Image (cartoon, rainbow, N blue to C red; front, top):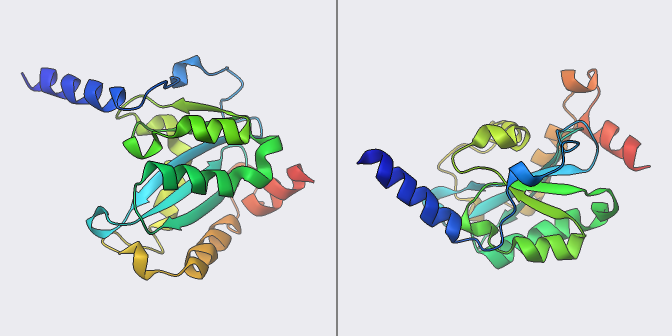
Length: 185
């Protein structure tokens, strides 16, 4: 009975987003080793009334983030994702995200950026491990239970800058910022 209820919940949640493209349909090269494959997620604030959109370029672990005072509104999420990724659209190959209804406007993002958007399997956060790790780093600065509407955009940007300046073993102890912009230029 419990398994049937879980399956029902998963199938309802997934059906709420039309025209999804499964992570299983993406090309093998989008494994995190090539430049231009992004992961996207939301961090939800106190009372689910605000959110922070997070994006991570998988090969360099470069983080982009912005506050969404309106919370999980799909149109606002899509607009912010486009705004953050637009300067890098020539280097954007794919975007991977979960099945939250806040990503229902995925076709708008794909069209504006000329990319393909893939959806991870339901309840499979390991399929977007890079952004999950970045979100964990953000939580070092913004603990759970924080109302993001009380934070300034400057504060959010400062967190992004700090995380992008952290050396990473994956990058031979270089920083995501340095490696990302080395590749861009």
